[in-house]
Figure 1 (cartoon, helix red, strand yellow):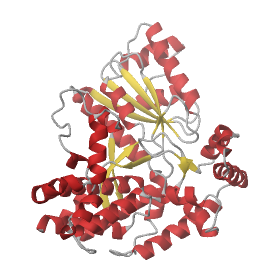
Figure 2: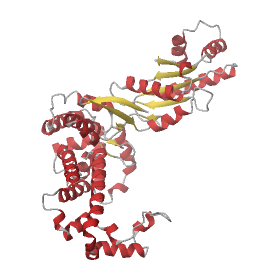
Figure 3: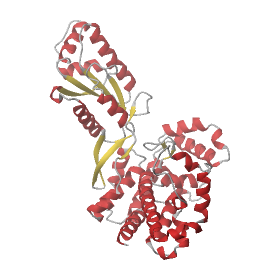
Figure 4: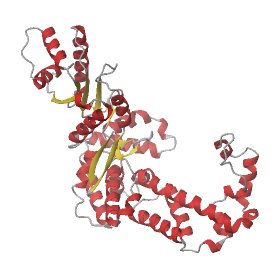
Length: 434
């Protein structure tokens, strides 16, 4: 379940961390007699409820073949679920609770119902009350065809689907085909999503500050991000900052992670200073936290960890994949005109012998009867080794050499800015024309 968002004037699909799990639940059509009829969703900060609610409604319609039967109610449940539901359904007064339940159950069995509850921070109690309501309807003989989604803010609950963290669902390099201005806006949107540690509300807050940054104005963008990160960290309570300091201290000390690591990790997570990017298992400092700390103390004892936290992971991975594709194609095409050099590829020949002997890890990656299995040493040739033996393939400023250096820079965790985006596209264009 993705939702459309606009950042830096660029509209893209946004993917929440647990959206795939929520979609799987929706695909089971929980309004129609499934075992689990109530779900909780943790919201991002800011004014994002409308986007989430609209996304949930679209998902329900997509999974219900008879969408005309599907009805939706959004409840503002201040104190009690049943009271808010009775008001929304405009139920008449009833003398007893069984009569109230039968009245509600009859209406809720006339269609497929999706009930979305804005529960604030009291999600568990609201979830339990909604579940008890459904069970009580069954006890009085009614079979409501309804599912209930409880939206909440605050700390993550084990039972809730986490929508507090997300990312752009698609890469940005393909936007180059639609012009440099669109590519720039896509690049800024990717940067905002990462700097905000995947929190859509924070990304929207930063977006409100970058409107005047024009195409290629990365220096101005950095200044905006610096100011926002500094102010954002200043809003964190002192207790959270102390936990962060202790966490970074043990991360910077030899063997430090074994001492109180799990406890501090949980504390710093609760303070909103650590995050786990979509699709990853490892926690790290939020990019804006790393930025603010390095601004205040460039030689911070945890500077290497903080520098790594600032590298835009999705963008770095996308560009690195493009580099791998270009490098693989370049090495393969070099074989056509330079296959006579194969015997001189010292490193590749050694790897090839070890592969044949089954002593190379790569030998385990090929299933039996796989036709892509290497048949000669050239399959193990690196671009660097090929360029050393065939200097005619590229001089110092050639696209092949620049590709090698760009890939190495990304592999060593260097910053992924606008120049990196432009470089990989320029290299790809030059190689295509060569």
